[in-house]
Each structure stands twice: as structure tokens, then as C-alpha cells.
Image 1 (cartoon, helix red, strand yellow):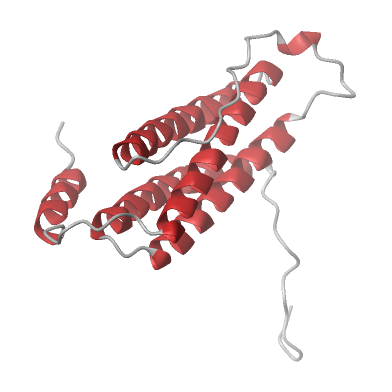
Image 2: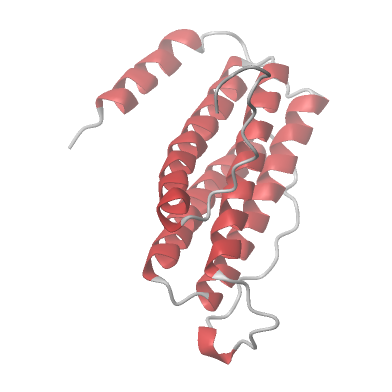
Length: 181
């Protein structure tokens, strides 16, 4: 089924991106290189989590996170290669292992895994916004907007799971003086 938002997005890209493409400036390259490093590291974390958990909800979260990160990594890698930028080194894929073989003193809990994914989403989203604010080229700005939007949607779904399980980390509430509690 066609996605109307994707159609609008693709149309907008062709209309807006008519300017000549200057080489990437050092800030754009650094942001993309750093983001790619963060995403590739997240993939390793997700593989570790999949080897650690036996909870189906957490497995689904990790599988979806891994698919998203792999998709973003592939697209960003292709863009950087096309621009002549070398890619950051990558860790090897983790072999599949049985969660029951991991000693409890070493094994992350499902809550720790899910909150780790949440932290990586927040880091990635923050990097997208910061990098977008520093972008000069329209095509680079569009890439950051797309990556940020994907992380935002995924983060919303992650928050639902964290809240459902009671794992959402909420700072203390602030009550101004004189406000009823």
C-alpha cells in the first residue's frame, strides 16, 4: 500500500533540492561519520541484547531497532562512499548464542536492555537535530530530517513498551511552591 507521507516527502525532495552541490564541509562529514559510528555501535548492542533476552517484547524491540539501524547505516554509508568519504571501522557481527548460557552476574536484565535502546535512540535523535542545524547542503539536511523522523517514530513505540512494563525512567515531578499536590 502506498505511503502518502513518503510520496509527499519524495516530491518535496525533488522540488527543494535544485541547488548545485558543493563538496561536503568538514562539519557535515564529521556529523555523518559520527552518526554512522553511533548507529553501527547500536547494531552491535542490539545483537548482544538479542543474545541476552528471552522476552518476546524485548526481542521484537531489538529486532525492529536493528532493522532501522541497519537501514540507516546502509543509506548513510552509500551516501558517504558516493561523496568519497571513508567509512568508520565496523565491529564484526555477534554470533547467535543462548540467553540461558550467560551467567546472571554478567547478563543484562530486560529493563536494562530496553533502556539501553531508548538511550541510543535519544542519542541518535539529538545527533540528527544538531547535524541538521549545521548542514549547508539541502540534500544533507533532507537526510538528517529523514533519519530524525525515523528515530522519532521508533522512539515513540519504544516509550510505549517502557511505560507498559514500568521501565520508563521519569525524573521527579516539580511542584511549584503553593501548587496543590
